[in-house]
Length: 119
Image 1 (cartoon, rainbow, N blue to C red):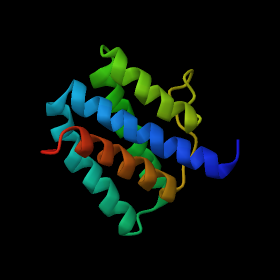
Image 2 (cartoon, rainbow, N blue to C red):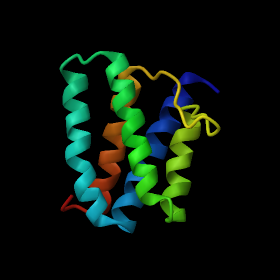
Image 3 (tube, rainbow, N blue to C red):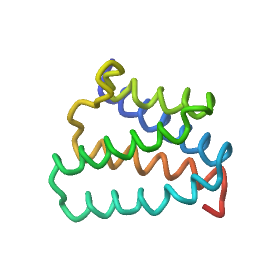
Image 4 (cartoon, one colour):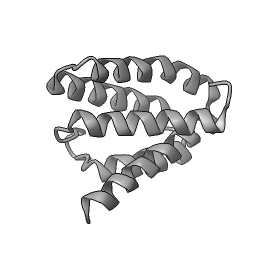
C-alpha cells in the first residue's frame, strides 16, 4: 500500500471513528475532546516522540476499555488500529511518528465535531 493511500486511509478511518463515538456516545465525545487537545498541544510544543507514543497508547487503551461493549465504535476503532499496525496479541502499537499521531488525533476530533457540532 502506498504511503499516500495509507495516510489517507488512516485519516478517513480516524474521522469515521470520531463520528461513531460522537453519535453513539456524545458524553464520551465531550470528555475526549480536552484530552485530544492536550495531545495536540504536546505535539505542537515539540514533545518527545517516545512520550507521545506512551500517551497515544494509553489514550487508545482507555478508549477501547470504555467502548468495548459498543460494536459500532469497536469496528471503527479497529479500522484505525489495523492501519496503524496495532498488535492485537500484545495490545501494543508500533512506534508512530508525531506527525501521524497528530493526523489521527486531528481527524478523530474533526469526526466528533462534525457528528455533534456542540462537541
